[in-house]
Length: 108
Image (cartoon, rainbow, N blue to C red; front, side):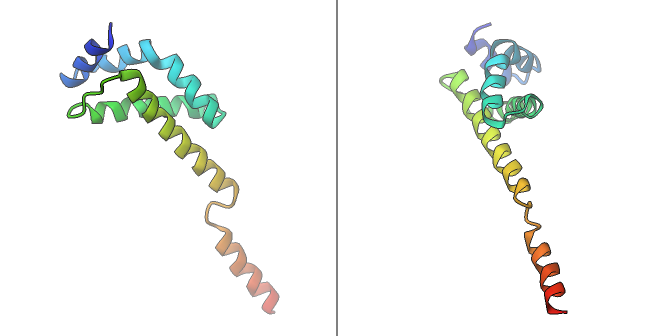
């Protein structure tokens, strides 16, 4: 199935659009995402989220190049996932609580 046919499936809200998209681009999107997030499981989750994002964007948006459209969604999701994971490794916003506890210990 070509890209225009897949896009038309999205526009008619035919769920086969997801299967056809996965058949045609799933492996490439997974590799793209895995190269960014470093985990096969996280990469697959990003790809699944890509399909949901494409489903929500079409219509009204009609991409000129489906592969680029899907790649951009995947890349952005993977980068966001990587940033989130990096933030969690740095404390995930819990550093303030640690500093408060340390201040209480030091003040006694």
